Length: 238
Image (cartoon, rainbow, N blue to C red):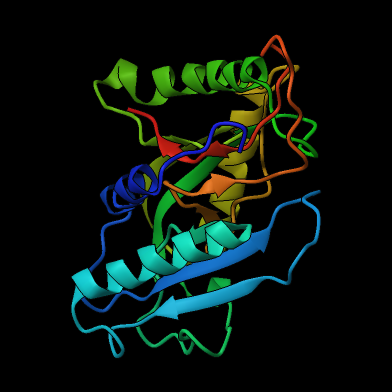
């Protein structure tokens, strides 16, 4: 990053993950580490799952997740996790590299509304992030603020992720409904510079972990600071 973030700050922020994604006793915690698009010297994806069997204490399970997420992020990976709950009998662990599939999800607790730019091959400038945030804010006003609720959202590094709470079974009807909802949001809130990703409707979809650095493309310094492109920390918007 052009402006490094301290490990203490990243650790503080990653713990806020559990405010969005509360953990019950049997819940596995899953990390998917993916090399950033356009970042040099790519490495293959990695999947790791922290289970009740290995970590009976929820606090220990969270700590193991946080430590590994930051370690893999430091190596250059982007770090993702599932925002819907994973079945307790999912066969993945810290060693076998199994990825969570749609069938491994119990039910749906969120719809992910992912606002991003058209060109995702390089880091965003501050102006581009602001333009995406403005589009996301219009949706937040309609769905949350105007109804007296606080939105649940993060800066994804180059855009905005908003989590719409739902209580839906993991079935084909819910899948079709979520897809329809995202297309409806896109038709209403898309702008010339910010788009709703309509492909993120499946139950096993992953999302970026707060406190980790989102790497995409190559950083581009700029003496004026106006057109600077740099990697940012994923952070909860408060």
